[in-house]
Length: 114
Length: 113
Image (cartoon, rainbow over all chains, first blue to last red; front, side):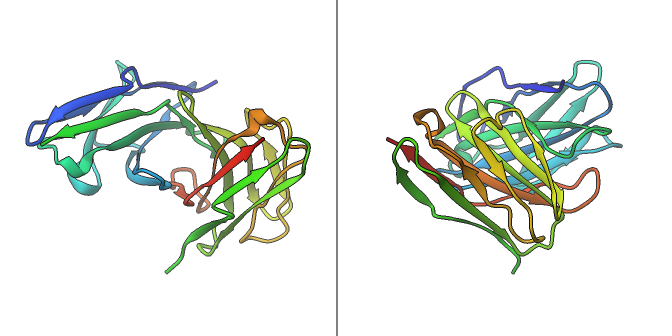
């Protein structure tokens, strides 16, 4: 069975500072990893994904994520946070050989203070 | 522009009633999914489909059913609504292929009284 852990329910950061939202995963095969963002009363929006290749993946709105196979982690990062980045962030994983549905973490609320 | 829509956006129903939530996508995607979102649980998979006439159960499928008669639609039916099914429901779709991202609808907030 595959699983995702997002250990922080909420992350607070000041505008202009770097941010990190943590994610660790467990799959039996090679992982396909995704980050999504959810704004209030909206559906989830795709940010970025790791399939294979370079461990640093760049995505939408200046976000990037680093895949670390030995630590089974896929942390989301941004060099300089904006107030408008405040939202709920979800990490998701699927096994490269299994079903195409995703397993999601419980979500991390990012609060960026002006 | 292609999109994925859900209806209704809000629904209040009573325990024991049958409820159907609609999902329609114009991406021409083969894969479609239903999730529910509850506080502290993230999104949990209810049912999914890889194409017409194909349906599969997810982790929380009890009390729910789906049918896929065409590429565009995957309606979710609650056969006899229970208060435990009060939740926000999201439909998603993705193109065929192992690593394509899913596109999500705006969600349906269902309250079962």
